[in-house]
Picture 1 (cartoon, rainbow, N blue to C red):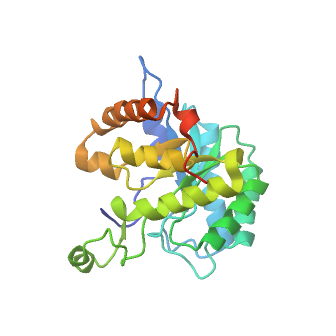
Picture 2 (cartoon, one colour):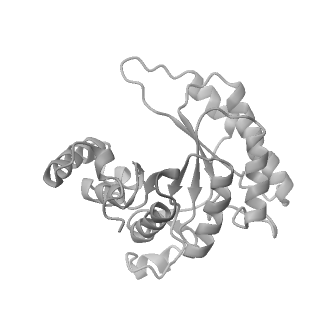
Length: 254
């Protein structure tokens, strides 16, 4: 799937909608994803950090019953100024320091890029762990238009935008493995990218993911994909002799 832009009506509108949400029978975990606004009016690092922290503050003041935050530092569709990137450790440290000052009690997960080198990813993670961020989401969209999972004719047709779904699967898995190998249980890893089946989800879990996140698979296969994955995971766990998901986390990371 081709993804363009970073469309959203803003924190205030999301808060309004979620404040009216009534959940009676089953408490659904709600994650709030916060990233820099996609605006040319934020040309500096300082302005971008202020933009992000203001969204956090709005949710902290709200009555929204959410479970966690996703801090998206990696959307490749955002308009960036010459110095507005949170990949350099110094810039990321400034952002996380500003977020830390808000004294947020709910867990924060950093949405990681997948287009960077292993070394650059580790540099980011080394900053993240200093600020006692509990987890990371691996990862975001695929920018590499030469990925073998892409259909060349489709790439030529859609010249603008970046890709979700299968083109993200392999690199996401590599980075889940890298992160778990280097940091073990110091991070809770949410595996994201190219999940269309229970097998896909199980692959990420065995590489080190404790949880999985998806949307493209559900767009193509419908909401029934989620119970199908859950049932399929039970079968895989039984086949491998595991009692629960926890037993399977990272077993293929050797």
